Image 1 (tube, rainbow, N blue to C red):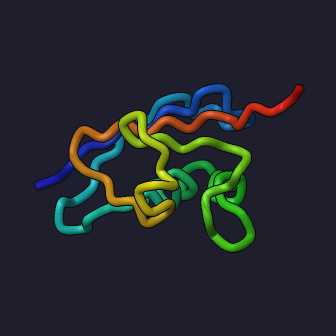
Image 2: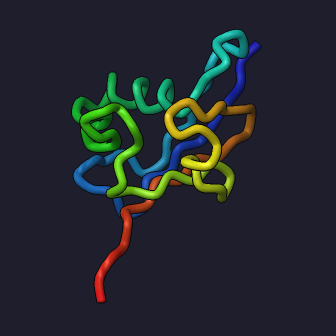
Length: 95
């Protein structure tokens, strides 16, 4: 059995990927890191853009799992479940 999750890149450049639906084997117990790694396989450089040098989620982006900040759910270790929607939004700063 598999679970399906959706990744939306909202305003994230230079990646051409805007929405991606992926299936994982249910026994894999996928995490946000697994999702980032799978996208990186087809879009080299994706992982380097999304993660900092320590392998944590980059502060240049907000990662939302079903509308909740992934940092509060374990960061890259945040578990994913069937039907989850992951939105990646560039951080906005300025004055």
